[in-house]
Length: 183
Image 1 (cartoon, one colour):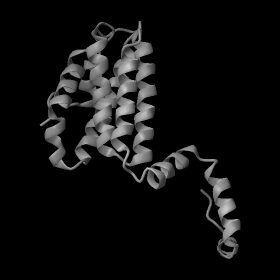
Image 2 (cartoon, rainbow, N blue to C red; image 1 turned 120 degrees about the horizontal axis):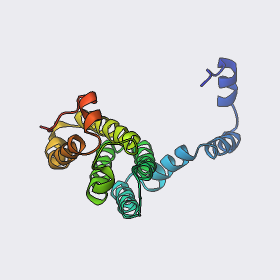
Image 3 (spheres, rainbow, N blue to C red; image 1 turned 90 degrees about the vertical axis):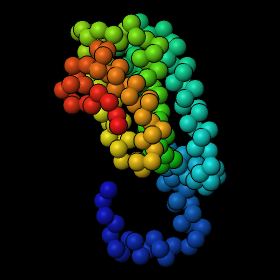
């Protein structure tokens, strides 16, 4: 973002209030993420985090039940869901929810699509790498949370790590140095 010239900055500050409002509204409409964040903070007063998490959880459940016939399709669906989870985090600043939903997504795919994710081969290579990297990201985000939350995530994270080290992603899990157990 370019720096604002000090003279321009002073001129903008001196603008009449209604002109500033018009400019602000025109600028805000160009950034959908900012609009959603303002909606969350100003209209919803930050009180709809649980509802927003539930919507994403339901989307995960619907997506997992689709008939993905290959690991490639599964990976595309995971990436789509991950985009929604990331957007949720940017809008709500909900770090806990990002970790919870990410773990839930990966565990759901392992539970519902074990046949497509069981063995490593050329068709599962990209998906296996994605799963291992996503697990690594989730582990790092989890470790940044307050340690009091670790107990809440321990079972689900251990289940995920066990699957990551057992299914097609095992090779990449070893390469990334993922632990076999979360303590």
